[in-house]
Length: 249
Ligand SMILES: [Zn+2]
Ligand SMILES: [Zn+2]
Image 1 (tube, rainbow, N blue to C red):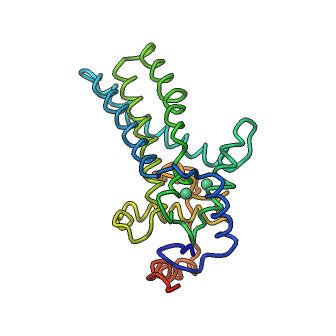
Image 2 (cartoon, rainbow, N blue to C red; image 1 turned 180 degrees about the horizontal axis):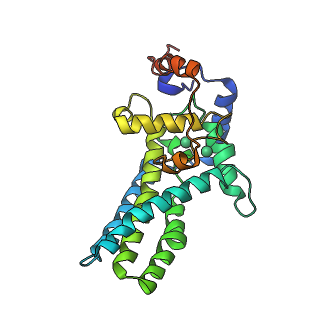
């Protein structure tokens, strides 16, 4: 019998059925979540390291490319999530389906965590997405910067754009780990997990907390969820319940 968050056994039947059907249909017998995660982290790290190794004597203007790319990536993350990941646009229906119909149905705010490494598949982008991202987002703009600006700017851009992709994947992965995993207790991760957990409430997912990484754009667009006072007072009890020891089955 599948248990839910932190070993709870009261997983709703509808959610259990959805997960069982999804796993049988989508997750192949050879899939390994640790290999998937390692591919994302090692592949991204290799690109970042290679790009930075080409930087020579950067000026302050070259360095400026790093924070500018970071902020722009945060905006793109926000708009992509608020737009095509939650609204069905032409040509981007797959993104909408995978995120809204699958990820948000598989994980709700009360049932947020992977039950085994196989469930990493519903958190991480498909592995091929790294090549797509590098080929469509990182390299073409990097080449453009190389041609019209400086080579250092181009390499800094590729490094930061790739780092952002990797941090999106790794942070999102951390949000869907069990509450009792050590990394979940780090203060920054705790705060970001809470931000993302609220986004997983089905009645709030179209309105609040669209940044998966740092809620910078959420702050500027005014879409950080502020809980009513009564709800804030109730929250510690709810979290305590989710962290309760495994129920006997
Ligand atoms: Zn999520
Ligand atoms: Zn979402």
